[in-house]
Image (cartoon, rainbow, N blue to C red; front, top):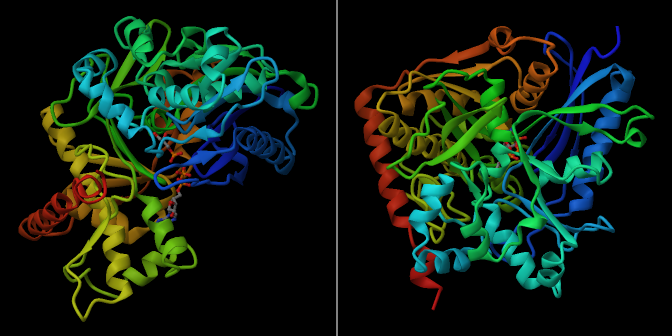
Length: 502
Ligand SMILES: Nc1ncnc2c1ncn2[C@@H]1O[C@H](COP(=O)(O)OP(=O)(O)O)[C@@H](O)[C@H]1O
Ligand SMILES: O=P(O)(O)OC[C@H](O)CO
């Protein structure tokens, strides 16, 4: 039978992946290519745009090869991607004019302050659902246009194109025929007006970003175009879904009803709660974002992002050299019954939701002569769970109801100790699902829905629970630990501004 598979492209912060799913949404072949992280200055993070494309294409070819799958058997492609990360390239040559500026990059913090000083905070929140922060794409695009010689003039003449990684991959896959993005990615730029569902004139003009360099905005489930046959053995394949990776994970967890939520533990932690077709405006430091769009309907989510989650485990490995691989963090942490009062706040690049402090910096508290590396490793793991609770507490307040179940995915969920601590410190069930690759699954499920491989009613069956972690810690202990955490966070806030900035 031809056209029996769906190919998902998952362009993440640390790697580009390709996963082929069958008609029961089971992964049948996959491949992954790591991408280089570049830190040219403190607080800056860049990716090579060409490497992103080449690694993604190589992953696709390797996945098809390893699964002995002919491109003719691929009925549909779904794309999901690290969000906010943005690239600007030359429309004619297709060459990026600067490396991609990654979501974690803080170089535009002062530009964000200037926008706030111009009284734009409320305008941005009302129009985009976001808060002014260097995290989002808008100020990154403005920075490139300001710092690359001649870029602004070229942009004004329509000689440049800009886009998040979905847009870049669509443009490459269609060999420059399609310059498009979806509503979820657009909703992360700080330029997308949720009411008009279009780029916002006022925000474009404040940042002097010409509309002509931005992609066309489409629904997430949509026919984007056919891939150029030259990439897949002479076969053109339709692209049927595009959505940011956190929204894709929400979809992949089949969190389709309002009130359901997921946490993805990758480089950062990303917690999204579906709020249905209602747009809930947070009063507790969360973002309103688009969950997905299909047909005429747009669905929304509340989101809280933790900037440094798995990245803290990478710091144990690469920065401190204490572990040889992430899984070793669990083995070390298991050597001690508790972190013995040690608290690690990994605010390496500031703090995201619900604190939004660009100037917080990391700290280790509670060291004694008895502290060992095992305690610090355990406290680092616990910091992922504490930061997630910070966000979930804010979500519960905004949504007006307690969270019963948190569905989880991402690289760090294989860590049982972390998952148990998460259930304990939350006081809620943490459900790890069978499909490790929930993000890619979400893109595939949406592509399959658009291409009518399955119906919406069938989706629920596709990502069952693998293990449910029940909360075991007593209430008093849980709240006492959490109070200590909150005190530690308070002490890290504003650090960079107080001590190093003139
Ligand atoms: N067993 C583990 N315990 C803790 N952290 C882990 C473990 N395995 C992987 N990680 C962390 O998870 C992250 C990778 O997850 P992944 O979902 O692949 O990230 P991304 O999509 O952001 O590239 C890394 O930061 C890594 O340190
Ligand atoms: O690549 P990930 O999985 O770390 O996700 C990055 C996010 O989309 C950034 O908002």
